[in-house]
Image (cartoon, rainbow, N blue to C red):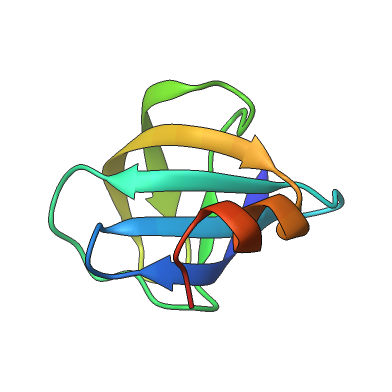
Length: 84
């Protein structure tokens, strides 16, 4: 599956990505230092699993460790997470 990074909170290293073909967003906390920007395409076999995972940044060509915090709608995301 693929998702596009659409919202960022650099202070907490938390990102939201819109899952391709769905209206849902996956909210992730990056567990290791790496450069992620809005518009980057990330992939994982299943975005709906919570907890630790390894994602691939297709745009920049590397893998990175994350903690999946939430799966939510955009309205919930904007209301409950401080992201730009």
